[in-house]
Image (tube, rainbow, N blue to C red; front, side):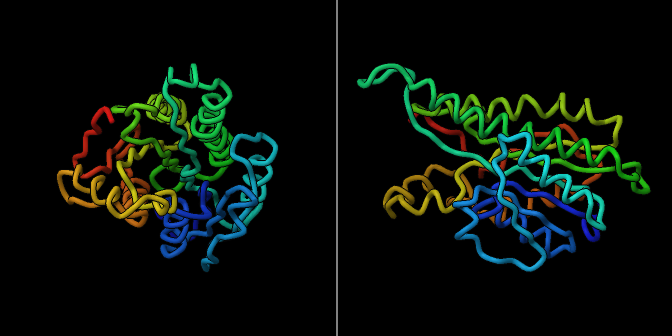
Length: 252
């Protein structure tokens, strides 16, 4: 898939994985629209080639409005990268009682339903574009986590949401094959995003020590690099790729 001259949508684009991916796509010549919540966008760093739009990924109306605006632009929508997500920690049963149902619902809504919402509405617009010389109309990259496979204590909601993203990959790729749209997923390990800024240096070192090699946290730029590789490689479809330094998460 040729990146230059296309339109791209990146969710969670105000910081972390989304910001790095939006910047990388813009550097390759894509016209990027970054989606995030209004509060997050207030602190977003301006990047040439990236336009920011306030939207909740769980909202049909808000996402549809952004996608339709992109569709009206001069470049065809060819790329979507879903990075929006939240993390929450709670056990199924703790001293405070059973897991809060609303917390579980919220994590599933943002991480799983939000990903699906952007995927379905973006695919509708992609399917209406003219295919390229290879018959392709678009590529969608979703974000899961190694927690989809090895969820730790307290990650029941997060693991369930990211496991759902992994499970969607094959059926989404098969559903959209007739439209020339590929779907792949990245399952990162421990990435040094702004969410990690609150942890101590000692805890950060302990996390890094658990990664076989390279023995450090991944960077958002490395995620972006992998996303661009999946977009560019025309024969990668229906795949979930772990980006974790061979990490296999322990129970806690």
